[in-house]
Image 1 (spheres, rainbow, N blue to C red):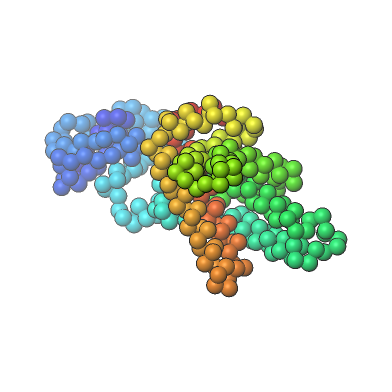
Image 2: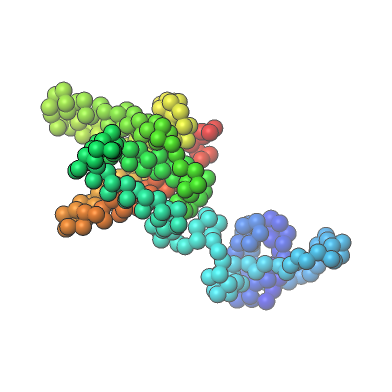
Length: 311
């Protein structure tokens, strides 16, 4: 083993001799460290560290120097709780497990039960619950679901990797309805022009599909703006249009991923409904929508500086 010093934080590291001439990363400051063959290029003891140890002999702190990545035992690496990104597992698996915590599964169960109740109200029009029957029941269920998905987006923008816990403070009916009206407004602003074009001209031509494509392209950033600003100002194109341009290559990947994911979720739900497993369609669909909400929020977490919103 030979000793090398990090040029960034001046931390002394140990490296095996077989890695001489190669580079590694300092575990403290993540600087690039050149592994040299001459051990005389560094001193063995740093006076500042020695004084610090003598000044604090009674503190129960572990002053053992952490091993650099090239000298870590694979078993020790496996015991590391999470990576720098905050994810416990490899990112594809960790994203799929986003709803798989206790609050996430409880919310899926609640929305599943509410969907079943809404179906009963729609079918039987129970007298005592007539005001909640039919379409109103579905609207309320959808409103609370949209509100929770928006909370998943907002929570993911802070770097969280598991579904948000809102069980202790559930939203009111008014908050849920406001959220779903905002989503309807976002859909009207992005997909409304294509719908009006088809409704007025009764044509599905190139112009229609261009309008649809532009609407789908702008929708994720508009939803993100609406959720984070939590007001009517989120619809201001001066916020979300420049944000699209500043993150264009990465945003294009987000749009393709969300569109593909949404199509996959709808296709799986359709398969369940057509194979006499319709009761399983709501929880599977909600699970998939929570993953998509997480991806949208995670995009903001990763490119917050480029987006440039002061929220």
